[in-house]
Amino acid sequence: MLKNIVSVLLSLSFVSFSALAQDAKYRVAVSDLIVSEAIPAKQQEIVRKSSLISDVENAIRNGRKFELLTRRAAHLQAIRKEQEFAQSDLAAGDAAHKGEFSNAQSLVQIEVLDFNFGRSASKVPNISNKYKVQDGARIELSVQIIDTSKGTVVASFPIKASNSGGSFIANGVGSPSRAVLDKTLEGVAGQLANQLSDTVFPITVLRVQGKKLFINRGNDSGLKVGEKFIIFEPGEELVDPQTGESLGSAETEVGECTVSRINPKFSVVDVTSGDPASFAEGFILRRPVANNKKK
Image (cartoon, rainbow, N blue to C red; front, side, top):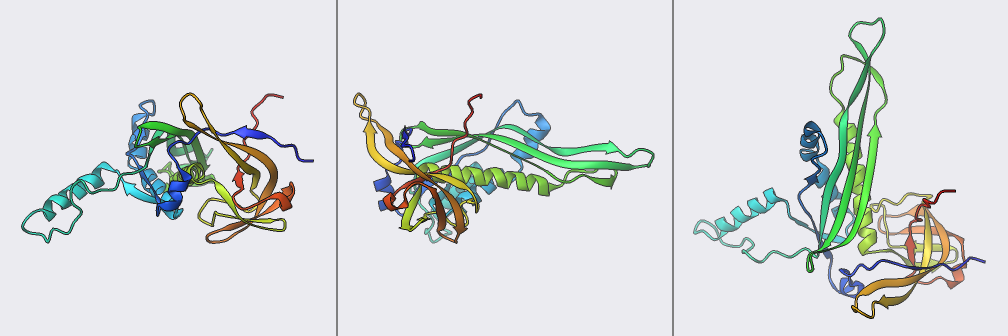
């Protein structure tokens, strides 16, 4: 018999799921990049000029769950200039008026804690101007989700990624391939978008069909066939009696499942433990948490 494990989830007070159901889309914005001063100056310059923020915005946009608002300083400056032009006697005046921008409900703030992109090289013995080279990139981020109505940090998580190309013989050391960096940045961007989506919109069961569950994630959600999840039955909301703050809900672990098919807008998982007859629409899937206890 599957053992029921009741877990109390941390509050995500900035999200009212009933309100989200009424709104067209939840509005988020990604702030300008913060880069740690502990990173060497040359690497700081590379990551600042990289496509990281664009990759993150694309990953969020491709998930189709959020309305993405720009908060990049350069974009806002360009928009302000266009607004000023719209107010002049040279334009029809149909641009967005000042003070009429939509507010983001949450701000995604990204700090780069560690970054390196380069090429290692070693001279091939007894052969002139021949080097064995290998390109590599690594990045570590600290991500915070900020409730813009209260200015509070409601979620914080680290993200890491690394990638290396195969070694090869080259005529000289040369420069590292951008393809290695691009793949690394796309990797962390996808992880971030998935974390954001899972925070605001948990993976939810849409339909139960025998031992198969249909869930609200498609082929742009980062799911992989064979990926494992734990199934939870949502419980009552827990409220702090002293502050009135919602602390999340009590959830009971009822089973496990594995992703078997990924469609454009939904996916199918196969139940591997638990009683599917007791599952229902609205049950929640969560990724297993690694056990860091020493044996």
